[in-house]
Amino acid sequence: MDIQTEKLELIKWVAEIDDYRIIKQIKTLQRSNREDASSDLTNAEKSAIDEGLRSIQEGRVKSHDEVKKITGEKFRDLFK
Image (cartoon, rainbow, N blue to C red; front, side):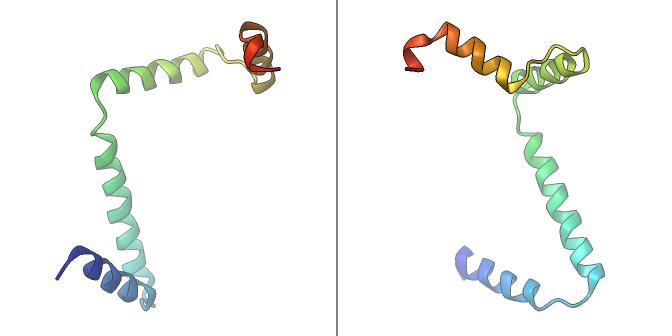
C-alpha cells in the first residue's frame, strides 16, 4: 500500500474516533513529533534562536513601526 493510501485511511479512522483518550494520545504523538523535528536544527540555528530570546528578555527589541521607519530611511529606493 502506498503512503497516500495509508494517510487517507488514517484520516478516515481519526475522523470516526469518539474516544477523547485516543485523541489525546494522538495529540501527544503529534507534539512529540514536532519536538523531534526541532532537534533537527543545527547548533548555529539553535544558537541564533537563543540569542534572539536573550535579546527579547533584555528588552533589546523594536516595534514594527520603528523597524518600518528605520528600514524606510535606510532603503529609500525600495519604498517609493
